[in-house]
Amino acid sequence: MTKSSSKVAVVAAGGTGGHMFPAEALARELGARGWTVVLATDSRGDQYAHAFPAAERIALNAATFRTTDPIGAIRGGLKIMQGVGQAQKAFKRLNPAVVVGFGGYPSLPALLAAKIQGRPTVIHEQNAVLGRVNRMLAGSVSAVACAFPILEKATAKVKASAHVVGNPVRPDIQALHDRKFAAPTDRINVLVTGGSQAARLLSETVPQAFARLAEPIRLKLKVDQQSRPENLDAARAVYADAVIEAQVAPFFREMASRLGAAHLVIGRAGASTCCEIAVAGVPSVLVPLKIAMDDHQTFNARQLVDAGGAISIAEDSLSVDGLANTLQALLSDPKRLVEMAKAARSVGQPDAASRLADLVERVAG
Image (cartoon, rainbow, N blue to C red; front, side):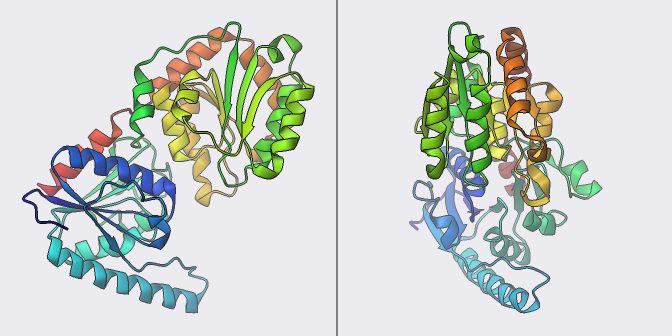
């Protein structure tokens, strides 16, 4: 890293895109404010970091382990302590003013090293349930930031002191917050996102539910659906037989434009999904992932549901007929969609990256 007179912030994240993407948004905001940002991650996190705006990357040893596996726990603990040593050495050279962790085991060595050296620390929790690594550290870091106003699995003290800043979103999603939701008339645009985990359920159930809608609704539909590759042909066949205009693909580019055009979103309840829907102000039907750690997706959906912006359907309760009935009622009622859109937008935090950066700067001093 080249020498700079600017303050240095170490951003520690990795493991999944859910950790890395908010970290990247913070890094961009801090960079715009004149900070030098250093990314601390491991090999898994590095695959999401190709566009990460960091002056330097620190590779830290880290590991996950089960407490029920004593040998694995010992091995994992040793790797983490190696990572702590690597981070301490790097911090002596970089002298960071603050270390910010976004959860996941790759953030643990960096935060532990910062605590040992007495450096200011911040953690950000993307989900409505405090993750395991953040849970370990929340009581001893300088500040806890979170995306949702509820923070399950946190102590009463941590809940009382946590800063609700939202979940940083991409600029193209942020820009959707100021647009006006237009009620559907001759065309009803529906965006179906599945995510990579347990996406088969939505890939199979959603097209069949749409096929059972009344013909006047079906003829107005324009569906963009993400689907697992092995379910593409079956989904396309169902839509074709039902005379529904649909584009089915494993991945869509320009998701912001699709989200901005949608009159309804159907998908899982990951933290990024819920926060992007809220910022964009789009009605949604959410099916929380049953196997998500600590059932965090159910809690993620709660803010939108409580506001009136979403309907949440438990995986065990999802059926073709039930979903069809829900969709028929929603898509037949443009006024309700407008009300849901307004409710969703009311809980969105389009300035989450700025709010988080403000907190980081206050902690750094």
